[in-house]
Image (cartoon, rainbow over all chains, first blue to last red; front, side, top):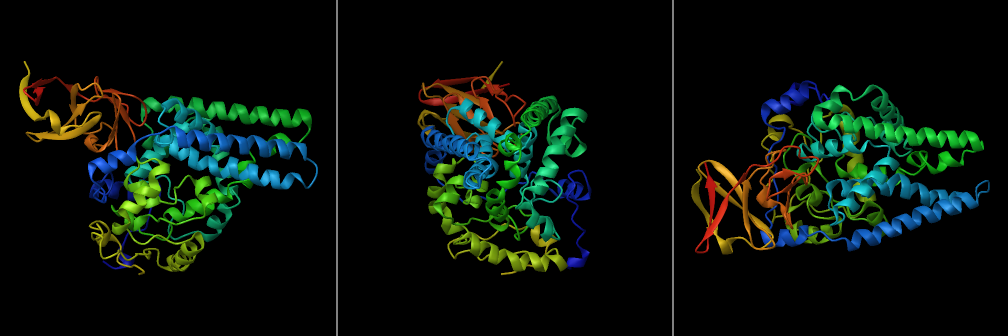
Length: 364
Length: 104
């Protein structure tokens, strides 16, 4: 099949690509995973409270400390470095906390996962009920067009939009009105396609709580006639989300879509220790998608165990972006083009039965 | 009345662990609780039909390996999103080192 014969991608969750994915068995398919002995996997999956309690205490200390500094120096340039730290903690590291606690793998104790999940969801302007379900779908149908609600860069790529993501503007523009719409008008058809009926009311209630807190923050700002309350609640989602985008974009961009092998559509990138702490080791992203039960603190061990079966990780974020950029440029004209990385000789071949039917063009 | 089917040997399942058992075109999960008792449920998660035997047993909870949906394997009760539908459970008996599950 030539690239011109492939139907255009329809990223709606209730459109033509959705119908095709369900019809062909691409939706809810059985995915490839590296063989890991049960006893080893059981050990890797073990939950512990210790690492996440330590990291959460540090997270909260940084949050409160940087907020205190920002308030103290408010009105002077000295507040800028404090807002820089506060913004990254609030607008970026909350994403990995949301993610790990949503999976329920960060802590062994369930309520600790739930509390951090709710706090992080608020920071991110994400409806905690809706996003739990959208992320479940992301794991069922990772980068399956018409099914996955969390595809960051669609094809052909909108590079201006991708660049604007670093400012947080686009996400903010989508997230905040979305919460208001859910609070006052309910869920839309796409959201209802992945949120079961029995959970929809909870999603609306959660949106109302978030909206109430934002309205209260605006009221305080007006009452005190100060921008400061908004700089502390809400706006960090704008000025602090750049690190979340920097790391998160690399998870899947320029790689294959409509496949059932995470080695084809997901990327592992080695990173500096600060970014790994902010990101809670989600740079080991192929490993996370293959084995979502493994907690963040065990992902480096999992990586060492299965790397013989995976494409070589990118040695840095810079390397990964340099690798992805020409592919994105090529996708502007040939949207079926994607990056296909070599597997080491020790790896089992790619599973690509759906993909070879759909997408003939690849970069090596 | 339950029809007892031989599922596995007691030693096939570690404490606080689970194994898969297939029988007559159906798939089951056999659990050994921390107190040594055995339990049996349907083998597939009610959310996305993933084998629970690849999941994690913590105390009396089985967590699905795909989306971390959690069930109490003693009762089959779903313990929150993303699982909403309970698991079917089956009676279990242990005789002479062998685990049997009761099917209708």
